[in-house]
Length: 439
Image (tube, rainbow, N blue to C red):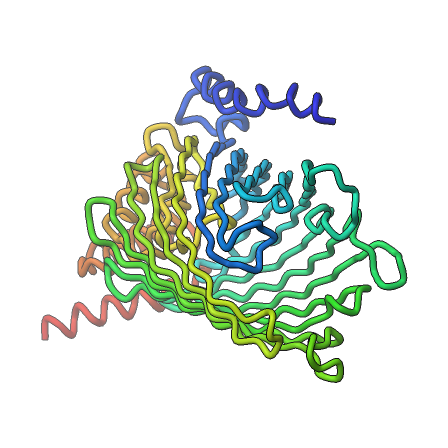
């Protein structure tokens, strides 16, 4: 198995270069099927210092380093629908102990579709294979707590209430099958998780974005000690300082209650925890392809289990690198940054009209109307009969206070689709506003 991975590794790293070289054979303005494929190759390195004494370490703190190379391919079936597939390989190494060393493979697929300009749906699925390859010389099951296979399926709805406010509802089902951990009845442990979260993202101004998330996790395991309910509330704030610098602040409050795990000093009382995690960090973007971040985490566990209580200090240093073509895929698994703050990495010179239209709409979601107008007009220069590109251009002009120009593009969209009653009402309202202003 390891030899197979070594053989596949060069192909994994060369694949983006092959796609890039192949792209030169196609006309950038065509809708050639191969030319519509996008890709993103990314490499994320995380170095961590953690003072948590509850880790399986020979000292009171630990230092670790992780690396996550990943590649994703995306294909837009239309201006409304896109599929993305991704493969990621992760390696985590700890300095003071080999008990926590882990590597894993993750493969996933995501299908996104815009039902309307304000409603998007996403269906995704992932498979993760995780293992601990170097647990000294022991084969004891208790030490192989990170060797498992995991399947997950998710459904997410994004509703754009206004140009600056986004609501998201997400549901996930996760099944994890352990290879070595055993239950009390000496069968292999299997955990099922139900995850529900509601989030609110609001762009306060051009430099500041706030996120609130309320979530619930239910664990159903065949090991009674691992059955629990967890509720959490997360607050996240991003502020652009300029010159590529961003300040990120986050606080998460979690309430964790176990169904059957009893306390060490009270066998008739089940364990419960209230955990607060505070983070403050700075991120620096060097162009669209390289970013560096440093974060400090303060975590406190208020538990009724005496040996569980701790105060943990963690410092992380992260480096992100990516290259891509015609892809606005966003990796949400190793960055706390919100989608509204992500760059789209789209090359306007080689993008198709459909891709430019989608990117223009994404900038409308961000409230960046200058960029939205730039991409929408570029799309219309390739094909002026795209209804949504005309609508997007109209929205951008309207938000910039240029109502006559907005009406011009909206009326062009109405010619392409006379049945758009909602747009017709918007045009009538904009025209009434112009008349009212003259009077």
